Image 1 (cartoon, rainbow, N blue to C red):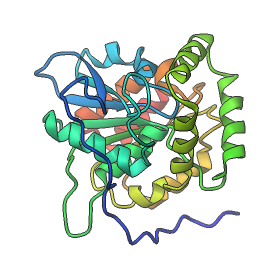
Image 2: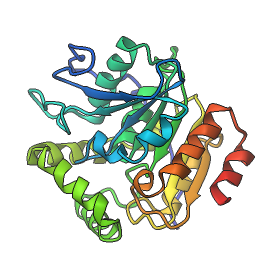
Image 3: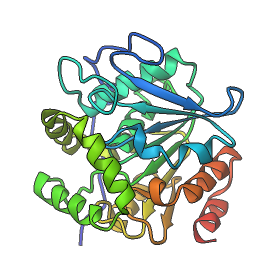
Length: 277
């Protein structure tokens, strides 16, 4: 039986060394696309490793009914250039934080998938004696990386097993997104993910957090999500029946419903009921 997660990270400073975005929407460091009404509450979507904002293609139009949706490509992925070096998780968080500040998105809800969940948690982490730069909540979908399998081989095996169970339409997007990502970017980013335990950042996140997992997710086991929830007891855990790792592709209406509940400051009970209705 695995022991409960323990948090012993004394270093809570945000990532350093990352250059900030230099332009508004099509920066050499961070590309983004926007949908929905400008007056609607904002939500920012952050993709996982080897992917891009294209992964949210099915979710964006559903969210845009109620939200101002901003989907980003992290540096080195999609349409955002890689820059002089491959960024760590904290450096990605520093770039995203600068982007949020420049675009007046500090009150946005942040939705991160896989690697994006790690980046979002780092953005929202409260530094010692300070406050987090972003005050919105977090929806973390398929949060990585399971502390029981923090090695490259086991992660690769899990990703392949999950991909075989995802719909063909998603696989096509995965292939196209992977072609835009240099092999060294994938390799070094995966190394950075393994070296950046999500639970350490999550323990210092003070905004509301929803942890979302597909019931058939081979990458993110239920036991790992339960351990994350134990690190931050006020978080809400939602498991979506029939879904794999890329929940927002196969169940966009469901994810949008969770975000809608989040927008209206729903209670834990409301969210849990939404996950089983």
